[in-house]
Amino acid sequence: MKTIIRVENATKKFKNIKVFSDLNLEIEKGKSYGFVGYNGCGKSVLFKCICGLAKLNKGAIYYQDKLIGKEQDFISDAGVVIEAPEFLNDLSGFKNLKVIANIKKLISDHDINEALKLLGLFEYRDVKVGKYSLGMKQKLRLVQALMEKPQILILDEPMNGLDKSSVEKVRGILKKYIDEGGTLLLTSHNRDDIDILCEKVYEFDDQQLKLEKG
Ligand SMILES: Nc1ncnc2c1ncn2[C@@H]1O[C@H](COP(=O)(O)OP(=O)(O)OP(=O)(O)O)[C@@H](O)[C@H]1O
Image: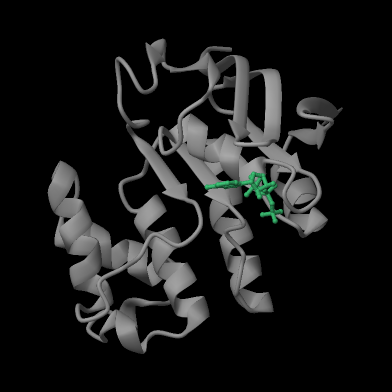
């Protein structure tokens, strides 16, 4: 299997808080990985560093052999849900996605609509995002992450704010994504999400990652 992400001796700290230290990790293409641990253990910070949204204090992260932050600013070809990427409240759901799609110009309006349908947002495509509920905004984030059919998905608590049937729907979408060869990095405080979707599970333990399953 081909390594797609390599984290080497990574250390990240904030002033007096050391989040992780000399952490090593290999992500193989086509596999699904879960990351678990208590609030504040470092899951989101690790994901941000992998994406290029935060800098390591020491060590290196490679995406397809390119050094993140140097040879490549941000991870490319990835669908990402981390915290709340803010949408423009005065634009509709569709137009927000269109603004993002225009950056890479990989997909058509039809593709955006199909992605909206996947999560049941198509009928709200023309409603301003400012009028979306919390769950609807979360679904829009997922649509954004999925719409360009990225080869890797990095999802930090993607089920936040979703009702039971939407969680089932997203699990189905992610399962299909993995079955079709996608690579998934996932955090969730719902252990069922992790168990259903991830073949390998890492737990944060004393500033390190411990392989818990797989
Ligand atoms: N920008 C920041 N400035 C200072 N400290 C930060 C910053 N971002 C995160 N931290 C700290 O880094 C540590 C790890 O935070 P992180 O958000 O990665 O936790 P997490 O495992 O994702 O938690 P949760 O399960 O609550 O989402 C915490 O102690 C947090 O307070």
